[in-house]
Image (tube, rainbow, N blue to C red; front, top):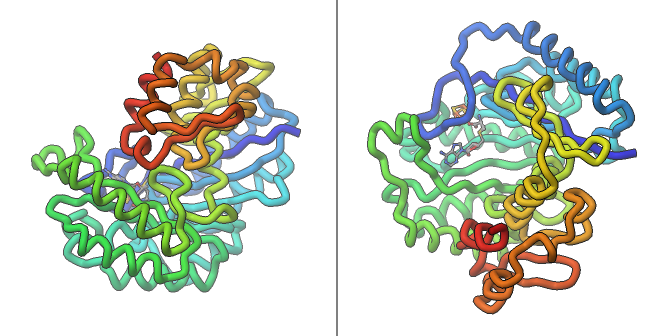
Length: 361
Ligand SMILES: C[S@@+](CC[C@H](N)C(=O)[O-])C[C@H]1O[C@@H](n2cnc3c(N)ncnc32)[C@H](O)[C@@H]1O
Ligand code: SF4
């Protein structure tokens, strides 16, 4: 039976962080009941499209999913379980903010069926947390980390680095601390200044490209030594703890997105569809889907498996890419190409956008 994954977008936050352009609303009284019943209807809609599938992973992302009571999260998981069989090793993740932590929140989430938790810590010192406009303190973050370590077997935190004025030495101190907790997974994002955000309006500039690249390589090298190998541009974990759900996106497998701004990709009867809404499907050509697979797949340390690429896109990898440019990329030491796979080298990871452009033109 073919697999697919489910993403639920929870579009609420307690406040808006000045760097963030994810779709979210600040609402004091969230109609949780109403949100969940509309999401249940969407699940029922997808059941008609995908009658014979198995669920590989579920992800509650945001926004701030930890603002939703665990009993409602459980309703959604139970509904999905009524509609489709679950894979034996199903991963069910939820993003939590340290500022939404309340009594027994994490243990209730575990009881609801969540088996992987990711906490948005963002910085491991109070002054940078303030700069990032976070409403939690370092102490709140450490309390959340302590709790998730006790309650879950699979856990992750998000940190943002390459903050303006940030020095490699102080970032390494934060990294050392992050690596010392015993978490199974780390997501480390370079600060991007997104159009329309408060940071953009205030004219805040990200660290210059050269310094950010140096900080990135230091991060990758340091975490490799600490037992957190990079498996995707911004994600670090050993194989058993790599995010099953996020790998579905990077490997081009099927998923549905539920909630405003969520999107999905489905292959039905050999045709590729991009969903922006359950009732809005755009047909993608094999070439368009293949381009997406190159963009997403090269982000992975293991790169693109050519047999999987063919299976998903319907196209042969070596016929699809620009062979002349591929040879140049190999000669320059940016990619490692074998008959079965292609992956970026450390040097190539710094130039992924260029490599993708050259391969897909
Ligand atoms: C969808 S957000 C949700 C996480 C959760 N609401 C929180 O803030 O803790 C996922 C992650 O994206 C990262 N992120 C958001 N905006 C970013 C930006 N402009 N630059 C770098 N990372 C960003 C943050 O690390 C954040 O934890
Ligand atoms: S970073 Fe998280 S809490 Fe902050 S605005 Fe974005 S989604 Fe909301």
